[in-house]
Image (tube, rainbow, N blue to C red):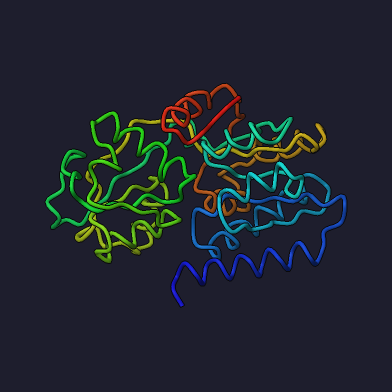
Length: 287
């Protein structure tokens, strides 16, 4: 069984068990775009979910989904209440789900970046060197794994459909790094925090795979609530994130798993640039 098929089956079975098992009407259903291995997502969101339940005062369930689009559909169909989105999927969600509002983000997400990686023996040193090469993006709907890397490639005069020998979508940031390391593709793009985690955890040998280009900063990940979530719950959720203190051991555990030292309030207008980039790339149509 391939890694991607195993990932899909795991998510389908887990999501089915959550939805069919049923959540009480007053249960707050959290989810997140599946930008990493599903077991890793469940691990990082367990203490987070426990904390939110205590702070908000209602039962909370984390509901994993099979792909990025499912988080947008889930919010629009009222099957999910608050979702951790990338920049582009947050734009899609706010467009699709009437009354959806961004609540809070990590401090790092106000100045996010993507890294372009390749094997050290590939000879690739610039974006122009990617012409004729094979390349991996993450998910089609990923901001840091597709939309913004594509945006900056275009700015450098590189059109994936025209200039790459071949390109594909790995489905997740860690998978992109694995594809490059395994020589499935010559290069790929992923978000800088996942890359740092892979390096820190020694999942990637930087003597063999390294960063050859880093994008300028842009705004990215954010928590979004659907319109039907009460103002009281929205505010309690946001304040629960803003009050986390990295100097407190219990908070530090949660924040380390979320790869941040501070959460800050989100302002919807800050994602206007992402929306424009998505429209320009033909990835978003608006009325």
